[in-house]
Image 1 (cartoon, rainbow, N blue to C red):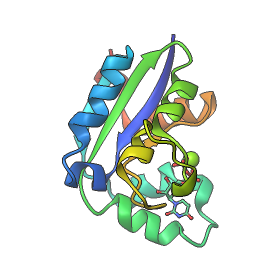
Image 2: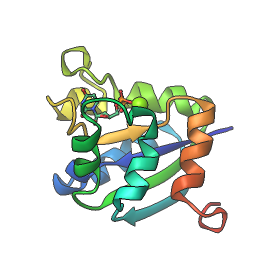
Image 3: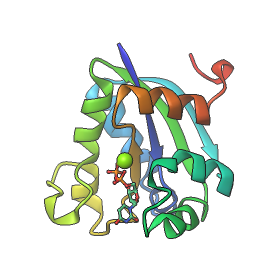
Image 4: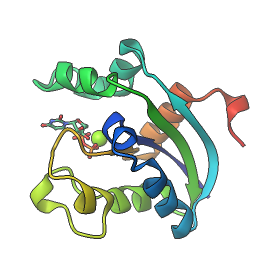
Length: 137
Ligand code: UDP
Ligand code: MG
């Protein structure tokens, strides 16, 4: 079994889509390993998106992620990382396939509702960044 870090971003919480997003992971058959509501500070958001530090959208992205509470989660399944990314859908809205979370609920590149780890190394780092070991099953 593999673990992945999934986060409902502030727009998802604001739009009352946290339950819908959790439901999709539950009904797909993932096991819930950790879950909490967090108001991220800038240091946490900057660390989470450190790979994008030099990108022109970095400042705005950190503003967005710190703009309200997020639902931080760890989900477990076979191939959880790839499966989670496929359920989330594409970054570019015009590539977002209906049936995916982004493809069903957003037209925006930034306010795209949900984050999911993209590789085993990032999953491990993100889980360790957002959760203490005692907060996980
Ligand atoms: N993002 C943005 N502008 C861009 C590209 C990305 O605001 O031009 C935001 C968006 O919220 C995205 C996040 O930065 O989810 C991380 O970008 P990445 O390319 O890693 O996409 P993801 O892994 O979330 O699909
Ligand atoms: Mg990414």
